[in-house]
Image (cartoon, rainbow, N blue to C red):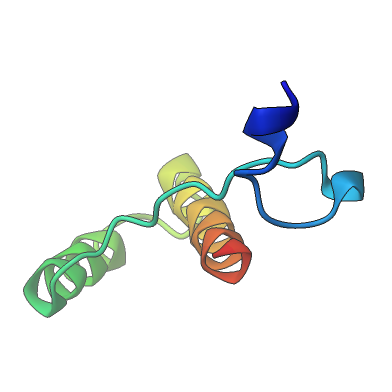
Length: 64
């Protein structure tokens, strides 16, 4: 187990968790997704979920 702990980055207080990968999307994909989201009602659950996903992506980037 001690060998595995050496692979992780960060402090032991963070639980030595590995950073999740961040999937990169092309500019065209981002434009298409934004256009599709614009067609949804503002209170659509998927809009809220995408907002949460955005935060998680930023956290994953910071972790790296």
